[in-house]
Image 1 (cartoon, rainbow, N blue to C red):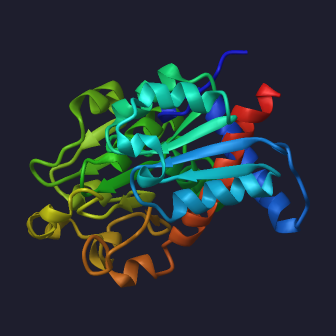
Image 2 (image 1 turned 180 degrees about the vertical axis):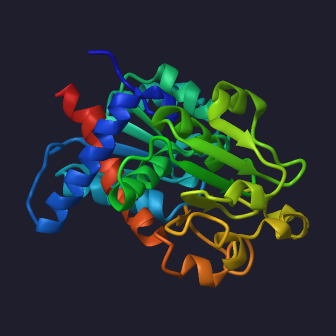
Length: 303
């Protein structure tokens, strides 16, 4: 059986993604009932972190433990990758010792290179260009609160970053309309936008993007590795803050999402993220269940 990887949402078909979301919700119910389900007993996941993390590390590690498996944490200073070992060599070595590898790193090309030289499934835990695991949790959260997202309108407000790129891919795979509003000079990659066709619209301002939207999403203005740009970005992004006034333009039952961590008073006000339309805590918790469904899909089928 051919090895499957999950580097972007495009690595699975729309039908597979739909089944994955449904399975994530089922696994969540199993967990909440306290039932023991261990399809990955004695299986091992290696987790390579070249960027720090809370939700990604805990969700994958807890998920493997709940499935009866194990997770090994590899920080840059605790592995030979941090000392310059070619990532191709690491891929070959780990493939003979573990059952899957999750990587959280900077350039997306590193994950792609690792996957080309690995003989076990490789999962993208975040790169500068894409964050597909977060989108699994976001889509699960939407389905739980509102049902199918097909035909709905989503507004992305802020930086054209990895989350924005993953929402563009999600619009393609889950068939919803995505409106994007970003400051000048902070657009998503044209190649990613163009591949989505008419499912994606770039709006001149956040008001146009949010008006009538069913879901409003944002992210921090300065991501990891951009700390030195924070002051400049805060000034440029200030008109793109998601606040109560902006949310009032969305559909009356619109939801608000943020992948976290959030900076209240910057990209979002406390009144929005802590308000009744926000589902950010469900969204964060669903990282566990969506990734368990992904691990089961990639690993249980290889038994």
